[in-house]
Length: 479
Image (cartoon, rainbow, N blue to C red):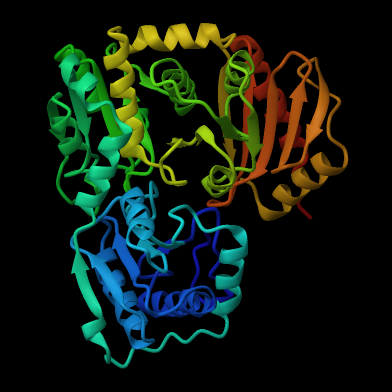
């Protein structure tokens, strides 16, 4: 997702195209990208199927959506626009439910307020695969950025995507069990699209709910619409102060989750994936494969082995997890960055459902969330410790690092032997003691990420320090 000012620079990354509003993400570029998507639609769908359009709470996102609607109507497509900003999983579900030609979603997800983005969601309700996005990108060069003629505006209508989605979500939850538990829940919407969705579901499920930041703020309160520790200080305090059972949050477009336990600990996505895999198996009697990305905890592998489940490892990006979900029965699929989906749901990450499944797990167990976490980590042979370094490098330095590790990967890291090298996505060093290190260039930002997992905090620190030192040494010498 590059920030782009010309058609040559508009690049679809792991989840669409993003850019800075008014600099790169302009009305002219939106018209161009919409026409490129429309050129793909012509090859895949007939025009008797509508195209859905939705947007998150960002500045001008509703206006960008209107522009895209006018472009598509001009080209003869019927367009259904959401009546307000909308969660990505909700528009994705409706793309399938309404038998459509897919949906355009205007969102920059968890990126800062100056960004906007656009992604195309096919009618199967999951992220577009690389073949689809490659076709769209190839169409951009010859796509016009001219304003539409204004004809066919009668082809544009407004609809409410909420009722169909909520009705479906309730079929995935044991509402009665949650109601009986009478959970006390704190919910921080972080000014996101989940407001008016997650709070409604919590109330429907009989939870005593206190909600924060449930209005549209295009600046996201001056923070990031990302449900991580530094953004959840208020939620943590509320949970602790009121002895709540748990705290819930989502990112800007509600496809990622944030969970706080009753002690005020912000739980990692790795932990939640593990917790919910066990919950689905033990409490709901579900079966299927576990799918994780190369950057996600191997505790899932241990749990899969214990329960005799198949485990699939994919490249980073939920589109790869979603693709596997469309091919086979998947109990749970997810990634360390906070996205997951489950058997029976759409092949798209859903922060609203993820949050409710955690509430459901607590309701079933009748135990504190922190205790459930301890139990499942122990059952999976943990704990394991994770870290991620985000290294902002020059293009030359980045190229030198990738070239070195691809051609001549190390045989040991911090004194631990490398038993296998994976190249599914970046370079993954599988260590003899069960730990691992992954280097990969970010698909959304100008940096290299180094992920690592080991069985002790001391080892984690050593591995991190050594990787940092090795990468520093590969910096090109200035002329």
